[in-house]
Length: 194
Image 1 (tube, rainbow, N blue to C red):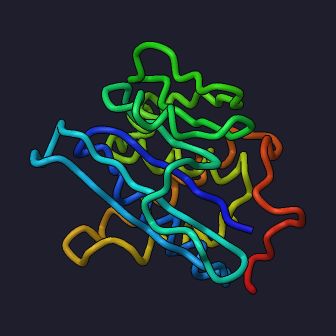
Image 2: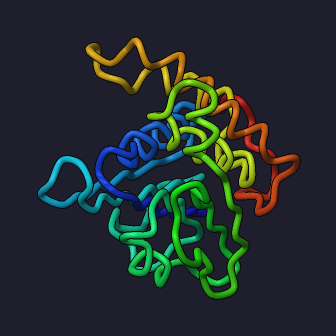
């Protein structure tokens, strides 16, 4: 079984970091993973997108997919192209603090998360993508919280390692926003290690 997740936003929001964190967490619990990132020519404010494909057996999907099971949208600017690729029955998590317009996708469950506001209130405004990712993981149980927080400590380059604990805390804040899985990724719970 494969699960495709699209992430979209603008440069500087942490889209690529969230995708990498999800991929590392999935790998750590024994799942197969492909991560594909793309971004515009500007460092901040331009489009940035990522695709993460996770499977419980060897993957058959290319890293750039035509459609996907779920999406995380951190900004409305580049949402329409991503929205049109989410399959009916999927899940959309979006940052309701900054998103303008509708985050609806045909036939999908939509989970608004005020990620930027929560991150700002907690004193780490740049961790909004981690809050959104934590909420997404809690809503889907694609990976465990333990795997995500461990990945947060692993993925940052050495010159940004001082942000790792903050990102782990942001993932936990996001996870705790969702009381129960909304769209479980797997028929059985994902074990903490495989």
